[in-house]
Length: 232
Image 1 (cartoon, rainbow, N blue to C red):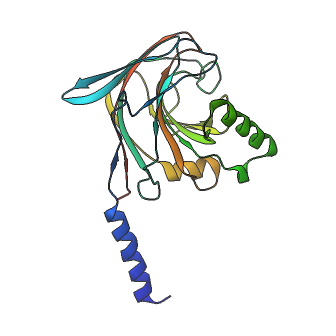
Image 2: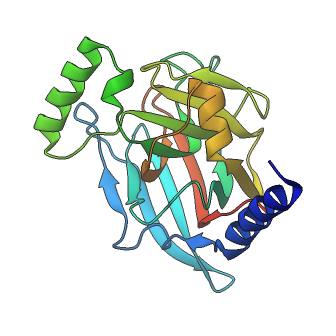
Image 3: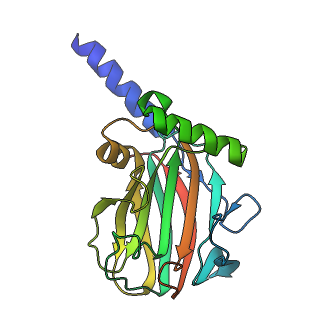
């Protein structure tokens, strides 16, 4: 390949990156977000939209409960905006003995992105189970997810499969005791390939959840300012 051709390709890539704009997500708690509940969990987390310093935020309060909020990602193209950014804080945390176990799978704050099911990568059993789930819920069910959590014990950057399903990879994006607002930034394309050893399919939902049902405890957190951004 000629030098001129290489330069042209490089300039084209730079131009595409420069043209990519942040994709701002509506404030959580608005009508654009959907409720996420689970069949065998009767107690649901309470989510309350509020304002702080003239900016919209979402308060979450869990008491032996679990439920979340979902936002459809129809307009997001990860090849253009692979970075997910948001702010979060913990007002009342949890301290499970083992956050990698089912008993310890409670988090005062978690943010996750689900991805399209890929039948060509799934086993016969996984395809059958996914088809049944789609029939029950009446819509396409995601196939995998990256779950970013504020952990009590795990160090930032730690990764492990979810205790209930290997199709969800847990990643510690923040760690420690309750704290003031922190900014988070993750690269979904890089994290997905590192977690599942192949490129990410299309994203389906952005979700958040504060849950404490496994230990029947209390947790409080806040979320704000979700957006997708290009790499610079």
